[in-house]
Image (tube, rainbow, N blue to C red; front, side, top):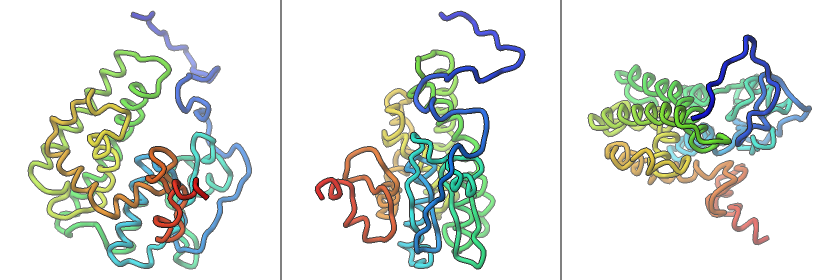
Length: 287
């Protein structure tokens, strides 16, 4: 057992804490360098990376396009968070919180910035009148959408950090956040025992948001923690996750701004639907 830590009277950032992403963590906001963000030809400019929060939005765009909303065409620009791209002045102007994803909606006379993944999903759903579910289920859909937004810090910043990224394995935080991750999986499993999708009979932005985190977790794609969390015991979540995973738009959305995994699963930037056929990373590597 390690010695107990006594917090100082006033915390100061004297040294990096270590672990993955330590080089980009800091207690202040704002840009670290000047760099404009690129602008493509489409109405929507997305600056992102294929973390769970980024996947939410690219899945939404691909679902909109698959549903026939041609005005939802977008350019997806890669933001390499490990390199600190999110601290460029141009990115900070779109998202002052310096987190991906960030969206610039240029479909109107004046560009509109939207940040926070849940806000982007809701903005797009309302703009196109799609994936909101039945009006009588709107409150249920919004409740589950915000349930995910509130729970992600516990799953990602809590469990994921201490289990996968912290410089040392500490029993207390791993146990604390594993318990919360499993509690959230249990909440979701019980809901999905009642309905095929989280808001009821319809597939909505709440499913996209939750699947990107909890669906990918039970499918073994986050933190290499599926066995540790006994995800197979959440049968309703697993069946729902596989059902959404089989959707072609979801499969495309997972690829966009992805820089890890098998080369054929990566599409670093997306500027046209044809990019999925012509610009997958295995083909780029062969050029």
